[in-house]
Length: 417
Ligand SMILES: Cc1cc2nc3c(=O)[nH]c(=O)nc-3n(C[C@H](O)[C@H](O)[C@H](O)COP(=O)(O)OP(=O)(O)OC[C@H]3O[C@@H](n4cnc5c(N)ncnc54)[C@H](O)[C@@H]3O)c2cc1C
Image (cartoon, rainbow, N blue to C red; front, side, top):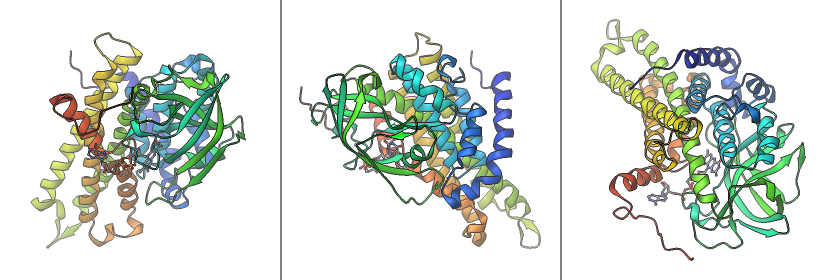
């Protein structure tokens, strides 16, 4: 049976997130973007409100909710902080904790997830390296097994949350991937770990972070780090040795769905602002500018496109719930690649188009800092550029899954065995 409605529980949940975001996030979002920081007490409050680890089972301190609920929360948060910094913080700390809950070892899950859920620690993703993020099989960071520990050397770049880890009371870390033993180009030599550079309030030796200056979504940091003989206990290994590539891609499917939810929340805010402006801005003898078809028809197109993007987001979230949470045997992890790639392709690009039009509709005022639309434009553009996966990689996944991998081979596939 097809059902396009949220359940009563989901509506109640959406209303509670909306009320929270209106009260605690909306009054601060400009200051957060201006000062480049989400206040730690806001992160803590969000933890208390149950806005992190929503789809993580309660036994690990999560809310025992669903990905549909996580998407609802992220969309609402982004509506009230259209620069999306707070939504990005929330989406990372919902998506990657779920990936850890699905694939991590029991001891690590019990140790890490409750602290992330409460807002005392951060848990994001560290995959990208300076030589190119799209080529995951080409990562060069190496983890070598020595006794019951892994010794890691390498560098990660453009990683969200590097500063927050240092500032949060407990610290935190990342779903992290490294080449097992040696750095050859291969999908089959990657192992995943929970990397915790600061844990229990202490920074571990061998981790050197830097923070980059970005053009948007200033409230959450993006930086890089080097690892020099950094030690990881084997209990923090996620999944089997050399299976990390397949696990991180499943994590990306979860996180990309929430990325798409964040961008549509911000875009909805921009269109709501446009609605108000187009009906009250009057020109040519008192006509609202909405009366010019050059504007209202474009508005109608973008409104429709945004609604289409929302369907992609919630369909992908619903499929993830069926795959991992209710474990319906009809749903397989591999089948998520196509709907998630379509959501991640569509939502950020529609959002960018919406901002570009709405900014123009506001005329010169749109170009001022006072108008604040630019904060949403630059913040969400991080996902059109390619955070959580470049848009061409989404196109590649869609083309590969529809046309077949034999026909669509734009990546080099020869591997050393
Ligand atoms: C704000 C921000 C936050 C980020 N946070 C994180 C994070 O928390 N953790 C993390 O691991 N990474 C993070 N990233 C990095 C992100 O995952 C990468 O930017 C992304 O994977 C692309 O990698 P790249 O930037 O190195 O570009 P490249 O991979 O070098 O790609 C460059 C260009 O080539 C195109 N391209 C690449 N391969 C192909 C192909 N096969 N076919 C066609 N076109 C292709 C891409 O679309 C892109 O336009 C973040 C990035 C940004 C901007």
